[in-house]
Length: 197
Image 1 (cartoon, helix red, strand yellow):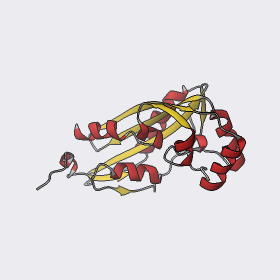
Image 2: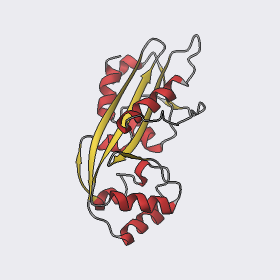
Image 3: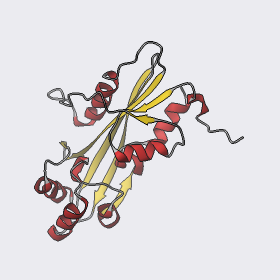
Image 4: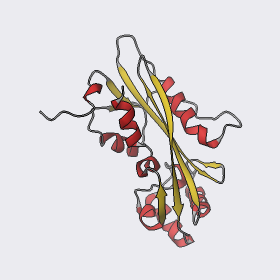
């Protein structure tokens, strides 16, 4: 019988508390059974003055703590939050196509940080950590930016882009750190944390 290296998780009801299709896809790479539950939304406002690099860990913790763990359940809740940081400023999800074009124009020709915070929570254990990658964009023309935004509509993505899409293929010159982290879930680090439970 072919044993999964994460068979230590068999006793848990594994819950991904995220509506992101990318995170669902990435967690699926670990070959473990899980379900998605987004029924406990949270206020994602950030304390004033918080360092941008600390925001994802803060928000992933807030999301995990909002998930009720009932008596008799044995859930393992996984939450995450990703931000794009350029020149010390957090670029969230764009409000509309115009905002998406503006964000991409800001990112063009520059290097940004992508930070994902992840929280794992069970009844007896909780841990949170962050993973950081650097992404260098080539210069982009207005025509390229508009093509991408109109065709791919990246309004649900921090920084207005998905690295796994057209823009990643044509405009991302270099990545230092985890590719999957830029997609929204640092799977290598998560695997190690889950294996240690």
